Length: 283
Image (tube, rainbow, N blue to C red; front, side, top):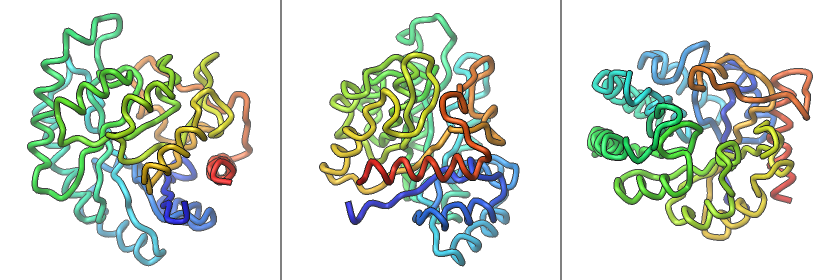
């Protein structure tokens, strides 16, 4: 546990990189899973901007652990995958400049109400091409379970991680809860393929996000098991207050329930509460 490195989606404290750095420093974190910076998605920033961010983080003694990209968050039927591959190529360059060893990614939004099995072949073909694109870059593609994508339930996460073994796994308890997935069952199924965790919790009753340990995600039990098997990195993803960029993370028509049971006076306060909840779980 002493070797655990804690990172965060600090854009939930502020859209501005300087204030993100301040939020990480006051919470004693090791660095950033970078998602939005100074009003732009990390996959859209220029390499010059990436170098500017890298210098600020270096000067603050912080690192970029992972690029929290939107790669794979496109509609499998309607959006242009070839264009999306170009975004991945640019994101790999951004990761290189930032010194990040990981890119968080997804497995495509599927049409609501249709059987995911109908899209399995297309999903796997695309994931293989994404893995080929990243090959030799030194950057790992890390798949996160997310609502509405092929890999939303544990069985399909295992399917794609098995079919495309170059991919790594990110385990997000809250997202599983919001899909109606028992997280302990999911952990038992996926644990050997998980590289790192997102520390986020939610309630089955209304899918609302709550501080880690206060929901139905069994976050403490899974975190303890992750650490016991040698896990060494986690990312705090608060989702305890509405923040700039939240809408852009979701599929059209979806809406995360935040700030319901637990209410905070500011984004900074919500960010600090999320970090504090993790510290409490670590004892």
